[in-house]
Image 1 (cartoon, one colour):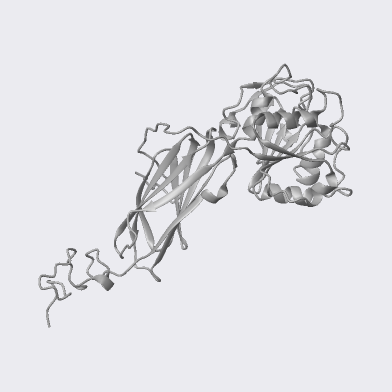
Image 2 (cartoon, rainbow, N blue to C red):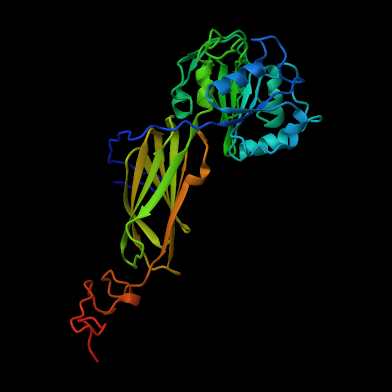
Length: 397
């Protein structure tokens, strides 16, 4: 039961035990890799070309890579078909935004929910500071790093404990990071993996450049970095559904809603949240959640139920009990939406709603007045012994 201790606090009980009934499906992420030889190394003899190496590592994870060979095209290219944009180590040059004003397109991509991965080099500050205005500073190089306390709150929570210094790992100075940035792997004031929230998306800084890593996982450098890249590209297809125990409620009736979230992919989803919005003519009375905690916000526009489910392997359920109050127009719609920290490959099944019209019921017998054969006297059984369409409890003319 959700004990609403405060308008934004709740506690959860009721646990379920689940078993897998079908194999999970692996879904490829669509990745655009910046590959302009004026900026990144695409030409060195193998295994030195870092842009080629990280593209090969992404393909080895089963994802689809599209190369973008010109910075000028990155200014206007439609990025919406891609889940992730990767800018490898800018070993040749940083972005001159006067020459290639990529900032608007990249900002819009991330702000709209995309993920940008940037590799470590002092020139990459032209992305972090020039494009996104984070104001970060370069840290020390050749630094091995370990996980910090923030790891379990990020998409890297199942990552390796340590990341090796793979021949020039670059870092960012933690004391110069913006307040909402999350240093995930660090050593003192040096962070080799940093998450920057930005709008509905995020920028991921990975301090290694993928030098000498090709072919991936086969005698090339690793040191935990391939696992971190895999986590940064985790694909998820969470599917949400909502059902109600009635399709034709009446005023004063209690309605029970069931919201279910299913994770059909091979990856565990982290940071899973479900937001359910009830209209003003529904009064939240009770509820349970199979995992995590829920908080309630009651406002003039209705009630918002925010459930923090945390890590989701297979599925989770939220059970909501609400009372129908006298509606102004009779229309009732309840909508739920699920989000996670992973790359969502199909957002169309992340939101669901159920709607119906609540009818008046003057005698509170559970039968709407419009279809009640005795609307002023409670007769839920609608008994009509003489078959005249007038209920037995109603005075005959």
